[in-house]
Length: 232
Image (cartoon, rainbow, N blue to C red):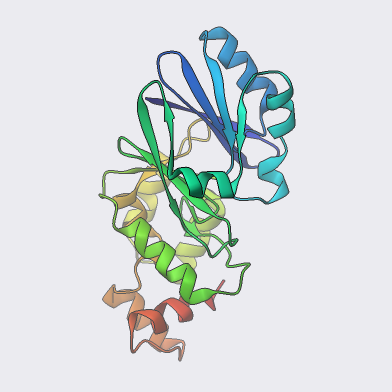
């Protein structure tokens, strides 16, 4: 399977995952561009779905459904199915509540579509207020291999590297991360994310020291996670 990224709005990122003949649109706000891509590559849109139910991610759904024979998979349908199959291959999913209660991540063949649970450079905001539940979701993501490519729901890379640099100005990996940043295809490996994203480094001694200098709790992993979230 292959993945095509589409930019829409100011910074939203949507995706088309496709095989030889079929495709699934995930956060398909760039509906017209997606439809053009489908026609150009002679692909049938089998499914339309979302990483979560915030309106900026739902905005393209109806246009895609109106102009294709695709089936819409809402959160309940995704959870019931446990994944999506196209052209005999499977796209897995994992429930990652925190940003929203219905947040999910999709994965296949070394690719993770993380929506607003994990951006490139920072985790999403915990709009549910369930900080501990969000921590469990991030733990699920950290269990993926370091060479997994992370494709997020927005491009906030430059802003979030500014945050990371302000928190940890001597991090040598930030410049290299920014040098690889390509607005035309925004992604990074999970290993690269672990090098620059302080929210994934709650067990890193440097981050622990920074939190302690700020007078924040660092006794347990969850304490450190809560302390980092308080800085957002």
